[in-house]
Length: 390
Image (cartoon, rainbow, N blue to C red):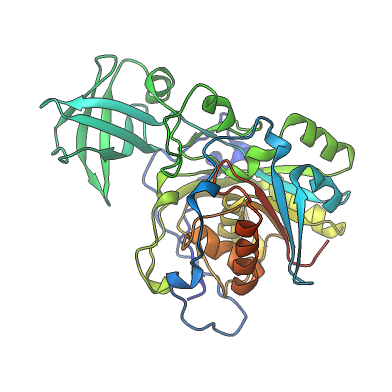
């Protein structure tokens, strides 16, 4: 196994280019696709274990807050073909892009998805929305001392209640008994769902800074963090230099923070996330390639979306769920480069970037980043990976 993907096709009316309204999520169970899993043409790699992706990370390098300016972060440039690296600033990014290149962003918008309440017995409950599944229903994680049973009620801060409908693969299904739709209830009561490695409560500044400046499709419960570095000035500079922009939507779920539990990577089961790759973007990608430009993904979510929409090396419009798991041995067909943040040890995202750049080269780059004091994770610094150099 080189990496796996389950596909789920949605009706044409749900694809971005044909929809009469934004489609932030699938409102119904989505069947898995009968399409075959794409395989790498490369020789099989030895069986990999999660311990093969470990590195030492001092806790003080985990960024607990954003820098005052979005574009002020550092950037580690990796030239995979030359096996070289450079310590740069994110503001240098335009120097490594060409006229006619296409940057692909994830335009998902983070919901204020963390709620607090109490059970009928008085016990405190923390609710983290995993996915909104209807106007008043959601799949959630519950932080509670004793798990509630089906039919249990949770009182929220405004006096409204959430009712436990059942369990779903380790998550709970809740119905929110409030007059307004759930997304409006979240805007009223919710808190931005900062990742577990940020050891503080979200404050008012996170409502802006844990959100990209191009976010427009509500549905995520974690930010596509590579996009957090871009401000309007950087986007304007890139446009002036002839760099094109395209967009996918992938609603990042709380499952992105779940650890790899299986030691052998072939046995790891990925969480599901909903995505939309529209026909307009596919046309942009084809024109970019035909004109000699490169497709640069802004974040691992873009990589996962594009690879999930690829069949036999060709991109197709796709709206549905994915469980794609990319690790070394996987053959990429949709991108020519990746801008990303620094990821957790033994995480699926570190495995993905190792598949693009090579495990040893990537781990050596991470050791260098630690030595040089780069800031890690969501509010941290950036890395630009160019497999064929600049």
